[in-house]
Length: 313
Image 1 (cartoon, rainbow, N blue to C red):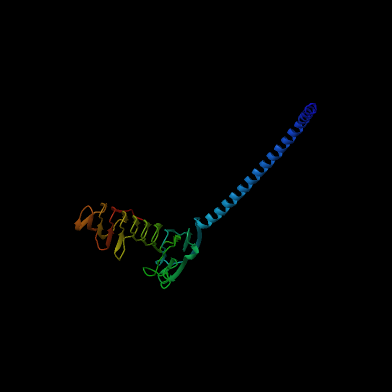
Image 2 (spheres, rainbow, N blue to C red):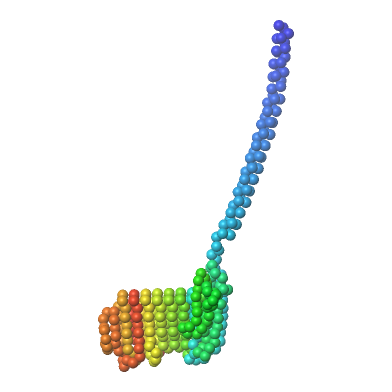
């Protein structure tokens, strides 16, 4: 019994002596485990972050590849040359406006700025055709029908078909005094400011503004017409026509003409003394200015008509 008691006391003493060492080793083990756990967690976090970043980069690259770029590209064309007085510089576009202004010298200068977003501006050719009546410059687009290529022909002729091409060609033309200007486009306005020769302007979707010392003619469908002309000696019938838009026409003093003016939704106002020769009303006017003779036709559907006399030039 005494021997068992002594053994128990000895074991208890040894346990008490070993306890601090065991606790120290336990603390060390916990520290190592904790450090390993933190390092492993941070390592995995960095790995996940890098994987996600790579995936994001791959997604962004794929996204940029799939989404079409919207930045526009542009290209400029220039031409200059002599056009004899009384001859015509003619510009024919499809998408884009046309602006004509006085030249500083005796040369015609044409600047065509081509801009595209989906389509390449290089696909649209600017073609120059010299002929007996002057010079014709066209924006020639790729034809959707290979059997009927687009061309550049003076006047009303020629073939111009466009499909799925968003290139815009803006023309700027400098015209010497005495040279006639003809501007034609489909989607765009036409501005002819303070010119010294006759002007003929035609578009479909766009307004027309003309100020010239010569005779003016203008036709559009969706847009207004404002024209001021300095001569009244035209020979062929003179027409100003639109569908959706007003017409404001200023003629020089001493004008003589047979006038036919019509509108469906709008009013007709004039400052000229007119002798009625037919139907006269708020929306219809047939009459004679001065001695009559020359034909003047002014027509719109949705818009008012204003006919007034200008000052001497």
